[in-house]
Every structure is written in structure tokens, then in C-alpha cells.
Length: 222
Ligand code: ATP
Image (tube, rainbow, N blue to C red; front, side):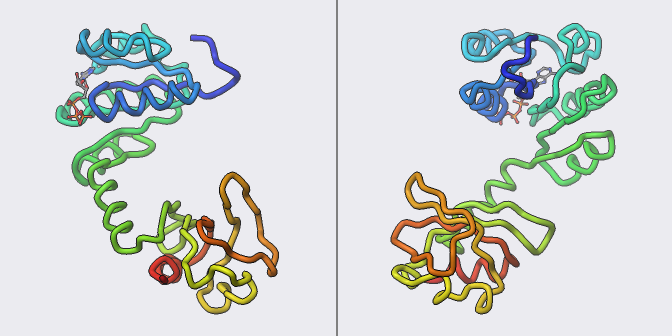
């Protein structure tokens, strides 16, 4: 399969609700995506919207080799309810030498097993969506978060109303909360490393780095 603009290429195995959303979103963003499912009707229904689609049983290593699975940078295995098929596919894809294999699991035990047989990353979508929703309900100001280890994160926050009209120096987030503002997004404009006299306005989105507990205290401010 030709490489589009030097961008990484993805294969998604299992085109259920999760796999098809993933594959279609990547394709809409201009990536080359091979979609694989053993169900011909599903493959057919997505054929126009993905770069390539193939109907095959992904537990069959020969079939995977025939579609040149080793040439893909990242393969996502999105088979949920049939764990045996997920496991056999993971082993096959890893033994064919794919550098980055991401698997979907439904339980922690499945996650442990998939990591043990070589998966590079395992996600539990329902569990992770539940945690994200709980976080959003607990701290409505928090928009998004990238974990940096266990205790720290880079977090996107809505500016608390109490900061509006005040400068970064006046808010003194580093001394009061131990949190550093990396950037402020206002509409389409991004100010990276805002100066101390930067004044917050309604609707600003802040990218901050710090301890999770400290960041949560800011996210809970009115
Ligand atoms: P969803 O993402 O919809 O929640 P799910 O987690 O319940 O899906 P399944 O429905 O078990 O997962 O599988 C997702 C897709 O994977 C289905 O379309 C199914 O046909 C496909 N699939 C399952 N086993 C294989 C296999 N061995 N080879 C190829 N595709 C498979």
C-alpha cells in the first residue's frame, strides 16, 4: 500500500462500533487505513470510506501475511467479545514483526495477558470512558488531561471566573498551587508561555502542568 505524504499507516482489525469509529476517524484525518473484519457485510459497508478493506479471519497468520501486515506502523486489534480471537490475533501480528500493536480489552485480566504476549498497549475503552466522565463531573473546569506518570499531568482547563481580568502574576499559580501555565488558547489564538502580565479573559483555555491534586483544585474553582 503506498504511503500517503510520509504519514504513518494504520490497520484496524475488528470493525465493530469501536474499530469502525477509530478507522473512519483516522481516514477522515487523511491517514491510510486498512480495515479488516471476518464479516464480509461489515467490510463491504466501509469499503468506500477506508483506504482498503479486507475480509479475513485475523487468527490466520498466513492471511495476515498476504495483506502485508508487517508493513504497517501501527495495528489496532479491536475485537472485544471473542477474547480468544483477540489473543491469537495479537500473537500473530506481533510475531509478524509489527512494531506497535494496540489491543482492546474488556477486563484487567485480559489486559495482563495481552501485555504478556507482546501487545505494546492495551486499552479498556469502557473503563477509560467511565473514569473520564467521573473526572469531568468532579471537576467541570477540566477539559482534557495527559498523564505524566502517576501523580503529574498536563491538563487543559477552562479559566476559572475568579481569574478573569487578572494577570498571570496576580493569580500566582506557581506559588499558590505549584502549577505552571504552559499556554493559553483564546479562540483560534494560542499564547505559548504567557508573560507574567498576560491577562485572563472569559473563555480562555489553559494548558497547565503540575501535580494532579493541585490541578484539580484549580479546576474546582468558580
Ligand atoms: P464493539 O466495538 O462493537 O463494542 P465488540 O468489542 O463487542 O465490538 P466484537 O463484536 O466481538 O467486539 O468484534 C468486533 C468486530 O471484530 C466484529 O465486527 C467481528 O466480526 C470482528 N471479528 C471478531 N473475530 C474476528 C476474527 N477472528 N477475524 C476478523 N474479525 C473478527
